[in-house]
Image 1 (tube, helix red, strand yellow):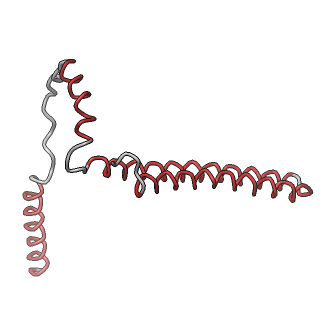
Image 2 (tube, one colour; image 1 turned 30 degrees about the horizontal axis):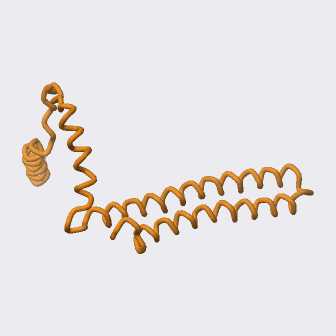
Length: 140
């Protein structure tokens, strides 16, 4: 009995310590929002005019870095688009074969041809990504 009371007291004490230390882990409530700062139109125009100059900096970091980002977008979007298209085409082909099994050979041929065309678009995205990475026309 004394042992269980001692253990219960120890657990309650440890819980109180944990709760007191966790109070600092929570995020404070947000403060009242301030009105957004209005940026003058002239400053935005100047920033837009200076941006191409910054891309051609002497250290040459911006163009390769942005080319890598562009290559990632090119291959990513090409793969996503092709994957969605191939999935839809395959599903429709399976639906057609299940409804009319006698035309399975014709549907299969058309499906394979359309999948080849969709995959060629993905390969074009890969070619664009490789050009941006290794044979970049933007770098002098």
